[in-house]
Amino acid sequence: MKEPQRGWSEQEDAALLRAADAARKKHLPLKSAFDQIADALNRRPNSVRNRYYTQLKPIGAAEPSFCPFSEEETDRLLRTVLLAQADGRSVRACTLEMANGDTRRMLRYQNKYRALLKAQPDRVMRIRSELSAQGISVPDPFVRDPNRPHVGRPPKQSRELEHSIRALLDNLYRSLIALTQNESAM
Image 1 (cartoon, rainbow, N blue to C red):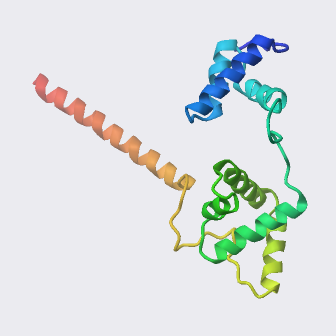
Image 2 (cartoon, rainbow, N blue to C red):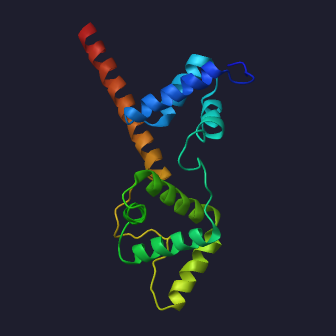
Image 3 (tube, rainbow, N blue to C red):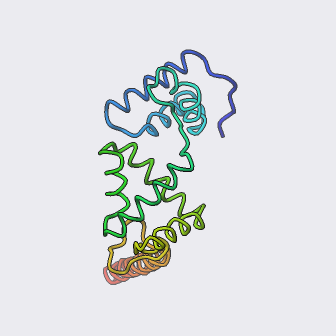
């Protein structure tokens, strides 16, 4: 287990900034730089990430490293995504359009929308009700449309079934190997 460290030296900060810059130039996720620096400096990756975003990123950054959504922006995001879904577009396509093709902003919008579904379902339903009151039919974002293909991780039941089938096939394979070894010994 890594020993906790106190404070950061200028050399460590410089190494972190160089690693982040190199990752960006190679189009790699910053997480790879954080993991690399964590190993090199005997620190935890989360500690490295926190140092980057709270202390180093704002230095010379054109935009703040974290800017929370206002209440108006949050409601506007919900309305826009719900209306796009009513038109048959995906959340991803809608948020990419909202971000004018900027994938970082798109991910920010998409993540905020997904977080709202989980953390503030009442707010989502309030916006949906407001749209319905205006005569706009919006699908329920909490109910999966059976006509749309499932995107993302399979449901837990599917993973459990896959694990069971894999275990069965592994046992069958071991049995066949044992059987062929017994036959060749005879």
